[in-house]
Length: 296
Image (cartoon, rainbow, N blue to C red; front, side):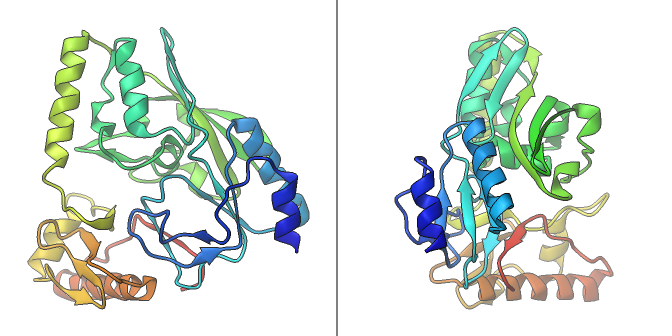
């Protein structure tokens, strides 16, 4: 009854009831949630979060669902799905986007205004909010190299953070600590000729064609300092290792693929097996960069 009442209060609720994580994550795994809200603006998101906090309703933020593994039991609370918050504005000051904007859309909007230097984001199947949250990147370049400002809701209060205040380091940020909801961010690239920007975008997209196909979470583990998680996993002879429907990619060992019918239990168990084997073989304990939602 509570979730029905909440849904009736917000005009931006979704039509999915219950909300399926299997249908809304890139790995295609997970149970359901009883309610999903789809705010269309930052103010919608602020209003929803404040209401849920006030009523003591647990909630979780979800963008493109590209870096999250959800329990087979699902999540007993509300999902705030940001992907309708996709406004992007580019001008001489940079490019500002709401948290639900796709990274490709951000890069293309910046290119139209002559901002280059963002092509490393091309093809990453994430929203800006998720990328800002975990300092995402590719080919050795990360969000902290282009961020000017991040707007967020912290403990129910709207705040703006300069780059220095974001606490960025490799695949982490201050936003990963405590009660924080990213609303949007201002990025600034490098002024370049559009022909050069287009070439860089094409090269970035071409480079990603070598990544494994199929349903996955992208890279599962952070790279240890001075080494590569993929190299360590491959050296331990784990390519092709399977658990139920989950399998370590034979193409890129830091990808675990849902080859069909994988459960969250399969996936999580395979992650543990990989960590244990790599540790026993090398003494290095790998750390996940993926987020877990629900009970494991």
